[in-house]
Image (cartoon, rainbow, N blue to C red; front, side):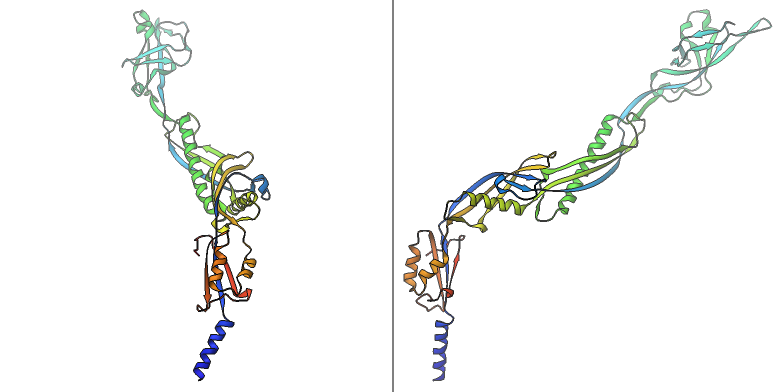
Length: 375
Protein backbone atom coordinates (compact mmCIF):
# COMPACT_ATOMS: atom_id res chain seq x y z
CA UNK A 1 0.00 0.00 0.00
CA UNK A 2 1.04 3.64 -0.31
CA UNK A 3 1.35 3.99 3.48
CA UNK A 4 3.69 1.05 3.73
CA UNK A 5 5.76 2.36 0.85
CA UNK A 6 6.00 5.70 2.58
CA UNK A 7 7.13 4.09 5.85
CA UNK A 8 9.78 2.08 4.00
CA UNK A 9 10.96 5.24 2.22
CA UNK A 10 11.27 7.14 5.51
CA UNK A 11 13.12 4.21 7.10
CA UNK A 12 15.56 3.97 4.19
CA UNK A 13 16.10 7.75 4.19
CA UNK A 14 16.84 7.83 7.91
CA UNK A 15 19.14 4.86 7.61
CA UNK A 16 21.15 5.94 4.61
CA UNK A 17 20.88 9.73 4.39
CA UNK A 18 20.36 11.04 7.94
CA UNK A 19 22.17 8.42 9.98
CA UNK A 20 24.88 9.82 12.24
CA UNK A 21 26.87 8.94 15.34
CA UNK A 22 27.83 11.23 18.19
CA UNK A 23 30.61 9.93 20.40
CA UNK A 24 31.83 11.51 23.60
CA UNK A 25 35.20 10.37 24.84
CA UNK A 26 36.79 11.20 28.17
CA UNK A 27 40.60 11.00 28.37
CA UNK A 28 42.53 9.89 31.41
CA UNK A 29 43.83 13.04 33.10
CA UNK A 30 46.50 13.94 35.59
CA UNK A 31 46.56 17.06 37.76
CA UNK A 32 49.22 19.64 36.97
CA UNK A 33 50.03 22.50 39.35
CA UNK A 34 52.39 25.40 38.84
CA UNK A 35 53.65 28.47 40.67
CA UNK A 36 55.59 31.30 39.03
CA UNK A 37 56.59 34.85 39.92
CA UNK A 38 55.49 37.27 37.22
CA UNK A 39 56.84 40.77 36.64
CA UNK A 40 54.44 43.51 35.54
CA UNK A 41 56.39 46.45 34.08
CA UNK A 42 55.11 49.70 32.62
CA UNK A 43 58.14 49.86 30.28
CA UNK A 44 57.37 46.46 28.74
CA UNK A 45 55.70 46.83 25.37
CA UNK A 46 54.87 43.16 24.86
CA UNK A 47 54.64 40.05 26.98
CA UNK A 48 57.83 38.00 27.26
CA UNK A 49 56.87 34.52 28.51
CA UNK A 50 60.48 33.38 28.78
CA UNK A 51 61.20 36.23 31.20
CA UNK A 52 57.83 35.84 32.97
CA UNK A 53 57.13 39.44 31.99
CA UNK A 54 53.89 41.14 30.99
CA UNK A 55 53.27 44.82 30.15
CA UNK A 56 51.64 47.14 32.67
CA UNK A 57 49.66 50.30 32.15
CA UNK A 58 49.45 53.26 34.51
CA UNK A 59 46.14 54.98 35.16
CA UNK A 60 46.22 58.38 36.87
CA UNK A 61 43.78 60.74 38.50
CA UNK A 62 44.10 64.02 40.41
CA UNK A 63 41.97 64.99 43.38
CA UNK A 64 41.52 68.12 45.50
CA UNK A 65 40.20 68.20 49.03
CA UNK A 66 39.65 70.95 51.58
CA UNK A 67 38.22 71.08 55.07
CA UNK A 68 38.03 73.36 58.07
CA UNK A 69 39.77 72.05 61.19
CA UNK A 70 39.71 73.02 64.84
CA UNK A 71 43.00 74.27 66.24
CA UNK A 72 43.91 72.26 69.33
CA UNK A 73 47.13 74.03 70.30
CA UNK A 74 47.09 76.71 72.99
CA UNK A 75 49.22 79.58 74.19
CA UNK A 76 49.19 81.23 77.60
CA UNK A 77 49.47 84.97 77.05
CA UNK A 78 50.30 87.76 79.44
CA UNK A 79 48.16 90.84 79.86
CA UNK A 80 49.64 94.11 78.66
CA UNK A 81 48.90 97.79 79.02
CA UNK A 82 50.43 101.12 80.05
CA UNK A 83 51.16 102.76 83.39
CA UNK A 84 51.75 106.48 83.84
CA UNK A 85 54.67 106.70 86.24
CA UNK A 86 54.83 109.85 88.42
CA UNK A 87 58.11 111.19 89.87
CA UNK A 88 57.51 113.32 92.93
CA UNK A 89 60.91 112.63 94.42
CA UNK A 90 63.76 114.22 92.49
CA UNK A 91 64.45 116.82 89.86
CA UNK A 92 67.15 114.61 88.41
CA UNK A 93 66.42 112.50 85.33
CA UNK A 94 66.78 108.80 86.11
CA UNK A 95 67.13 105.65 84.02
CA UNK A 96 65.40 102.54 85.31
CA UNK A 97 66.11 99.08 84.05
CA UNK A 98 63.88 97.03 81.80
CA UNK A 99 61.72 94.74 83.90
CA UNK A 100 61.08 97.26 86.68
CA UNK A 101 58.36 95.76 88.87
CA UNK A 102 55.02 97.49 89.40
CA UNK A 103 52.45 96.12 91.85
CA UNK A 104 48.78 96.98 91.36
CA UNK A 105 46.45 97.76 94.19
CA UNK A 106 45.02 94.24 93.57
CA UNK A 107 48.47 92.79 94.20
CA UNK A 108 49.17 91.88 90.55
CA UNK A 109 52.76 92.21 89.40
CA UNK A 110 53.62 93.87 86.08
CA UNK A 111 57.03 94.50 84.50
CA UNK A 112 58.22 97.33 82.31
CA UNK A 113 58.80 96.16 78.74
CA UNK A 114 61.63 98.61 78.09
CA UNK A 115 64.21 100.75 79.87
CA UNK A 116 62.44 103.64 81.57
CA UNK A 117 63.77 107.16 81.33
CA UNK A 118 62.13 108.98 84.21
CA UNK A 119 62.16 112.76 83.73
CA UNK A 120 63.10 114.93 86.73
CA UNK A 121 60.39 116.73 88.62
CA UNK A 122 60.23 120.55 88.39
CA UNK A 123 60.27 123.22 91.11
CA UNK A 124 57.63 125.87 91.33
CA UNK A 125 57.64 128.37 94.17
CA UNK A 126 59.99 126.06 96.02
CA UNK A 127 57.68 123.10 95.67
CA UNK A 128 58.24 119.94 93.62
CA UNK A 129 55.85 119.47 90.77
CA UNK A 130 55.73 115.79 89.78
CA UNK A 131 56.83 114.71 86.32
CA UNK A 132 55.49 111.64 84.55
CA UNK A 133 56.23 109.16 81.78
CA UNK A 134 54.01 106.51 80.20
CA UNK A 135 55.51 103.04 80.65
CA UNK A 136 54.45 99.98 78.57
CA UNK A 137 54.12 97.00 80.91
CA UNK A 138 53.42 93.29 80.76
CA UNK A 139 52.10 90.94 83.43
CA UNK A 140 54.68 88.83 85.25
CA UNK A 141 52.58 85.73 84.54
CA UNK A 142 50.10 84.61 81.94
CA UNK A 143 46.44 84.35 82.72
CA UNK A 144 43.10 86.04 82.40
CA UNK A 145 43.24 87.20 86.01
CA UNK A 146 45.78 89.86 85.00
CA UNK A 147 43.23 91.60 82.78
CA UNK A 148 42.59 94.11 85.55
CA UNK A 149 40.81 97.41 85.23
CA UNK A 150 42.35 100.86 85.82
CA UNK A 151 44.43 100.69 88.97
CA UNK A 152 47.13 102.34 91.09
CA UNK A 153 50.66 100.94 91.16
CA UNK A 154 53.59 101.05 93.53
CA UNK A 155 57.21 100.27 92.72
CA UNK A 156 58.15 97.03 94.43
CA UNK A 157 61.85 97.87 94.68
CA UNK A 158 61.16 100.94 96.83
CA UNK A 159 59.13 99.14 99.46
CA UNK A 160 60.35 100.21 102.93
CA UNK A 161 62.08 103.37 101.65
CA UNK A 162 61.14 107.04 101.37
CA UNK A 163 60.83 106.65 97.61
CA UNK A 164 57.94 104.22 98.00
CA UNK A 165 55.36 107.00 98.41
CA UNK A 166 57.10 109.49 96.10
CA UNK A 167 56.95 107.33 92.98
CA UNK A 168 53.66 105.83 91.94
CA UNK A 169 51.82 104.74 88.87
CA UNK A 170 48.30 104.91 87.53
CA UNK A 171 46.60 103.17 84.62
CA UNK A 172 43.63 104.76 82.91
CA UNK A 173 42.78 101.80 80.66
CA UNK A 174 42.31 98.12 81.57
CA UNK A 175 45.13 95.66 81.07
CA UNK A 176 44.22 93.26 78.27
CA UNK A 177 45.31 90.20 76.32
CA UNK A 178 45.93 87.80 79.19
CA UNK A 179 44.59 84.25 79.11
CA UNK A 180 44.71 80.97 77.21
CA UNK A 181 44.21 81.32 73.44
CA UNK A 182 43.95 78.65 70.72
CA UNK A 183 46.71 78.33 68.17
CA UNK A 184 47.58 76.07 65.27
CA UNK A 185 50.04 73.39 66.35
CA UNK A 186 52.28 71.17 64.24
CA UNK A 187 50.08 68.25 65.23
CA UNK A 188 47.05 70.11 63.85
CA UNK A 189 48.72 70.64 60.47
CA UNK A 190 50.01 67.07 60.32
CA UNK A 191 46.61 65.68 61.25
CA UNK A 192 44.85 67.78 58.61
CA UNK A 193 47.33 66.74 55.93
CA UNK A 194 47.09 63.04 56.84
CA UNK A 195 43.29 63.05 56.93
CA UNK A 196 42.88 64.81 53.58
CA UNK A 197 45.58 62.67 51.98
CA UNK A 198 43.81 59.49 53.10
CA UNK A 199 40.47 60.85 51.91
CA UNK A 200 41.91 61.77 48.51
CA UNK A 201 43.50 58.32 48.27
CA UNK A 202 40.22 56.55 49.05
CA UNK A 203 38.28 58.70 46.59
CA UNK A 204 40.94 58.15 43.93
CA UNK A 205 40.84 54.42 44.56
CA UNK A 206 37.08 54.36 44.09
CA UNK A 207 37.23 56.50 40.96
CA UNK A 208 40.12 54.55 39.43
CA UNK A 209 38.29 51.31 40.15
CA UNK A 210 35.48 52.49 37.90
CA UNK A 211 37.79 54.10 35.36
CA UNK A 212 40.06 51.25 34.32
CA UNK A 213 38.76 48.93 31.57
CA UNK A 214 37.05 45.72 32.60
CA UNK A 215 39.81 43.56 31.14
CA UNK A 216 42.41 45.16 33.42
CA UNK A 217 43.20 44.09 36.97
CA UNK A 218 42.71 46.53 39.84
CA UNK A 219 45.57 45.73 42.20
CA UNK A 220 45.10 47.89 45.28
CA UNK A 221 48.68 47.35 46.45
CA UNK A 222 49.97 48.96 43.23
CA UNK A 223 48.14 52.21 43.97
CA UNK A 224 50.30 55.14 45.05
CA UNK A 225 49.50 58.74 45.93
CA UNK A 226 51.64 61.84 45.94
CA UNK A 227 50.93 65.34 47.18
CA UNK A 228 51.12 67.95 44.42
CA UNK A 229 50.09 70.97 46.48
CA UNK A 230 49.13 71.73 50.06
CA UNK A 231 48.25 74.92 51.87
CA UNK A 232 46.83 76.14 55.15
CA UNK A 233 44.92 79.32 55.86
CA UNK A 234 46.89 79.60 59.10
CA UNK A 235 50.60 79.27 59.74
CA UNK A 236 52.24 77.20 62.44
CA UNK A 237 51.62 78.72 65.92
CA UNK A 238 49.20 81.26 64.50
CA UNK A 239 46.55 82.20 67.04
CA UNK A 240 43.17 81.13 65.72
CA UNK A 241 40.50 78.65 66.71
CA UNK A 242 39.91 77.30 63.19
CA UNK A 243 41.84 76.97 59.98
CA UNK A 244 41.24 75.57 56.50
CA UNK A 245 43.61 73.05 54.97
CA UNK A 246 43.74 72.31 51.25
CA UNK A 247 45.49 69.51 49.42
CA UNK A 248 45.90 68.39 45.82
CA UNK A 249 47.02 64.83 45.18
CA UNK A 250 47.72 62.57 42.23
CA UNK A 251 46.95 58.87 42.44
CA UNK A 252 48.40 56.37 39.98
CA UNK A 253 47.67 52.69 39.54
CA UNK A 254 49.87 50.18 37.74
CA UNK A 255 47.51 47.67 36.17
CA UNK A 256 47.69 44.78 33.72
CA UNK A 257 45.44 42.67 31.57
CA UNK A 258 44.10 39.47 33.07
CA UNK A 259 44.29 37.97 29.59
CA UNK A 260 48.09 38.44 29.56
CA UNK A 261 48.33 36.60 32.86
CA UNK A 262 46.14 33.81 31.52
CA UNK A 263 48.29 33.50 28.38
CA UNK A 264 51.37 33.31 30.56
CA UNK A 265 49.79 30.53 32.61
CA UNK A 266 49.13 28.54 29.42
CA UNK A 267 52.72 29.08 28.33
CA UNK A 268 54.04 27.80 31.67
CA UNK A 269 52.02 24.63 31.29
CA UNK A 270 52.84 23.96 27.64
CA UNK A 271 56.56 24.58 28.22
CA UNK A 272 56.63 21.82 30.86
CA UNK A 273 54.50 19.19 29.12
CA UNK A 274 56.03 15.98 27.87
CA UNK A 275 55.80 15.22 24.13
CA UNK A 276 52.40 13.89 23.18
CA UNK A 277 50.70 15.56 26.13
CA UNK A 278 48.23 18.44 26.14
CA UNK A 279 46.00 20.15 28.71
CA UNK A 280 42.36 21.07 29.11
CA UNK A 281 42.26 24.86 28.53
CA UNK A 282 38.69 25.29 29.66
CA UNK A 283 39.55 23.73 33.01
CA UNK A 284 42.60 25.91 33.66
CA UNK A 285 42.30 27.60 37.06
CA UNK A 286 44.57 30.47 38.03
CA UNK A 287 44.95 32.87 40.92
CA UNK A 288 47.45 35.61 41.65
CA UNK A 289 48.81 37.21 44.79
CA UNK A 290 50.58 40.53 45.20
CA UNK A 291 54.22 40.29 46.25
CA UNK A 292 56.08 43.61 45.87
CA UNK A 293 55.67 47.01 44.24
CA UNK A 294 58.54 49.21 43.06
CA UNK A 295 57.04 52.65 42.33
CA UNK A 296 60.38 54.10 41.15
CA UNK A 297 60.66 51.51 38.38
CA UNK A 298 56.88 51.14 38.01
CA UNK A 299 57.10 47.38 38.45
CA UNK A 300 54.95 44.89 40.33
CA UNK A 301 55.73 41.29 41.19
CA UNK A 302 52.79 38.90 41.51
CA UNK A 303 52.79 35.22 42.32
CA UNK A 304 50.82 33.32 39.68
CA UNK A 305 49.55 29.92 40.74
CA UNK A 306 47.34 27.55 38.84
CA UNK A 307 46.15 24.02 38.18
CA UNK A 308 45.06 22.14 35.08
CA UNK A 309 44.29 18.67 33.82
CA UNK A 310 46.75 17.14 31.37
CA UNK A 311 46.13 14.16 29.12
CA UNK A 312 47.57 12.35 26.10
CA UNK A 313 46.80 13.88 22.73
CA UNK A 314 44.26 11.88 20.74
CA UNK A 315 44.07 11.82 16.93
CA UNK A 316 40.30 12.15 16.49
CA UNK A 317 40.40 11.58 12.72
CA UNK A 318 42.38 8.39 13.15
CA UNK A 319 39.90 7.27 15.81
CA UNK A 320 37.01 8.04 13.45
CA UNK A 321 38.54 5.92 10.70
CA UNK A 322 38.91 2.98 13.07
CA UNK A 323 35.23 3.23 14.08
CA UNK A 324 33.49 3.69 10.72
CA UNK A 325 31.02 0.95 9.86
CA UNK A 326 31.70 -1.02 13.01
CA UNK A 327 28.84 -2.67 14.95
CA UNK A 328 28.11 -0.90 18.19
CA UNK A 329 29.39 -3.69 20.50
CA UNK A 330 32.61 -3.88 18.51
CA UNK A 331 33.00 -0.07 18.58
CA UNK A 332 32.58 -0.08 22.36
CA UNK A 333 35.25 -2.75 22.77
CA UNK A 334 37.60 -0.78 20.53
CA UNK A 335 37.06 2.36 22.59
CA UNK A 336 37.50 0.54 25.88
CA UNK A 337 40.83 -0.79 24.66
CA UNK A 338 42.18 2.71 24.14
CA UNK A 339 44.67 3.11 27.00
CA UNK A 340 44.42 6.89 26.99
CA UNK A 341 40.62 6.87 27.46
CA UNK A 342 38.79 6.81 30.77
CA UNK A 343 35.32 6.49 29.28
CA UNK A 344 33.16 6.96 26.19
CA UNK A 345 29.51 7.15 25.12
CA UNK A 346 28.00 6.39 21.71
CA UNK A 347 24.73 7.97 20.55
CA UNK A 348 23.21 6.90 17.22
CA UNK A 349 20.51 8.48 15.09
CA UNK A 350 18.16 6.94 14.34
CA UNK A 351 18.35 5.02 17.60
CA UNK A 352 17.73 1.61 16.04
CA UNK A 353 21.02 1.60 14.15
CA UNK A 354 23.21 -1.33 15.11
CA UNK A 355 26.38 -0.08 13.41
CA UNK A 356 28.17 3.19 13.11
CA UNK A 357 27.94 5.07 9.80
CA UNK A 358 30.49 4.09 7.15
CA UNK A 359 31.24 7.68 6.18
CA UNK A 360 33.68 9.77 8.29
CA UNK A 361 31.57 12.92 8.01
CA UNK A 362 28.67 11.09 9.67
CA UNK A 363 30.68 10.50 12.83
CA UNK A 364 31.25 13.31 15.33
CA UNK A 365 33.66 12.81 18.23
CA UNK A 366 33.66 15.24 21.13
CA UNK A 367 36.33 15.30 23.79
CA UNK A 368 34.76 15.61 27.23
CA UNK A 369 37.23 16.18 30.06
CA UNK A 370 34.83 17.29 32.74
CA UNK A 371 32.47 15.68 33.58
CA UNK A 372 33.79 12.18 32.91
CA UNK A 373 31.69 9.88 30.71
CA UNK A 374 31.57 6.10 31.20
CA UNK A 375 31.86 3.27 28.72
